[in-house]
Every structure is written in structure tokens, then in C-alpha cells.
Length: 313
Image (cartoon, rainbow, N blue to C red):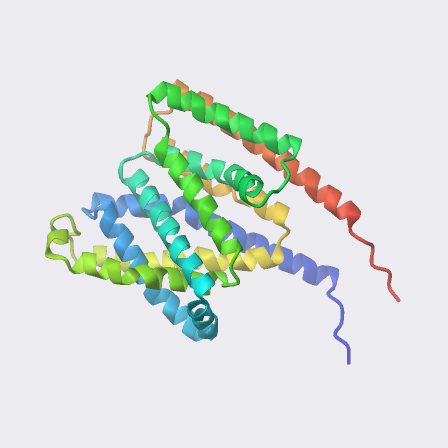
């Protein structure tokens, strides 16, 4: 007995579920800055937030992987020398990315973090050209040129490169490139990454000298720190669900909702100054984003035209 083909209704339902899951993931990633800011105001340093986040993420992911029966994927990563070396590299990159973002929140430089995540898709394109020998399309070149102009304006205005934005964009771009080259699933890969660095985090938290800058509050703050594991894993699961149900172009549009939220929170909630130099920089970056999205739409339409039309027998 053959399985019935999916109906238009089931396609719409899957797309709706994917859209809600994608929005949920990017909303969490956008609003997580307020969570980190609250912890920092309660006396938790950026280093402690990172250490607790990694350790609790490993614990929560271990529970999820047990429930979903994905330990075989984890062991496969550990048995493969190539995958393990790649995951050690990706662990370093994601740790740098997480710490830089938490530091940006703690020092009220979230607008620079927002700038970095706006730049991330353009960094991905550059990495594809430089390392994977992909061809650069005209609109992609224009988008990158606009982004470079924006970063140059900010560098001249503040007298130094915007290291937070550049660190976030480059570390996450390289992280995505490494993860793309290995067969590990999103959750299994993150489990290995957090497990690799968890012993270092636990040693740091147990070190007597770390208590000088550690959380001095009660159980409420420690409960919020434990929540960081759920906050880390939940958007990952939602994103994985969205990626299976949505077109890449739709995901491409959704990815800019997170830095947009970060920017709005930076200006309206944290009260970061939106100076003339930042206005010019973001004008260039937003123009680059628009050009990038136009290129994505154009490429998607060209791909759709080239796809063969299925003829029913």
C-alpha cells in the first residue's frame, strides 16, 4: 500500500509550524540579551555567565539526547578523529562567540553585537568565496562593499575597529563553516561541544578565586543560571524544526529578526547612544541587508525555474 502524497493543507500546516518555530527561535535569540543583562546586574560576571551556560547546557542536552535516543550520534562524533578535531575547533569558536556576546551585553554595547549578526550572512558569503571557491554574484559583491563601507565609517569615527561586531560575525561564520563540513546533527554536535569544555568551566567555578567575582545572590539567581541550559537548547531545537519545514529563503529573511530585536533593545531598553557615526554605519549595513535579500530572492527564483516539473504517471 503506497503512502498518500502530501496535500496542500498538510504543506500549509508544515509551513505554518516551521514559521512559528523559526520566529520562536529568533525571538529567544533576540530577547536573551535582557536575560544576560539581568544576571549581570545581580552581580554575575560575564565569565561566570559563560561557565554556567556551558555547564547547564551540557546537562540539559544530555537529558534531551537521552529522551530522543540520539546518543549513537554523539558516540559517532567521538569515534571519528576528523569529526572530533572539527568539534574541538567549533567549541573554541562558539565559546568565543558566546563570551563576546555576553560581554557586549554586560558593557552595554549590544548595538555592536547587533551589527555583528547583521554582518554574519555576508561573512558567510566571503568564507564561501575564500575557502570553498564559490563564485561571488554581483549583488553579493555590492552587499559586501556596502557593509565594508559601514564598518570603515565606524572605525574612523571611534578610532578603532568595532571588535565586538567583527568577533561575533567572524567567529559565528567560521563556526557555521566547520559545522557544515561534519556529519554531526545540531543537537549531538552541541552536546559534544559543551561536553568538551564543561570540565574547564566546572574547574573555574570550583576555583576559590573565582568567587570574588561570582554570584553573591541567593537561590533565585542560581535558578536563573540553571535556566541558561534551556535557553541555549530550546531555540536550537526550534530552529532545527523550522529548517526542515521552511525554504532557505524564508529562513534567510527570518535570520535578520534577531539582530533587529537586539538593536531595538540596545537603543530603547539599554539606552545606548545612537550617534551620527552609528546612524551612518547602520544605514550602510541595512542597505547591505536589503541588497543581500534581493540577491537571495533572485537566486531562489532562478533555482525554481531550473527545477524539473514532475509529471504524474
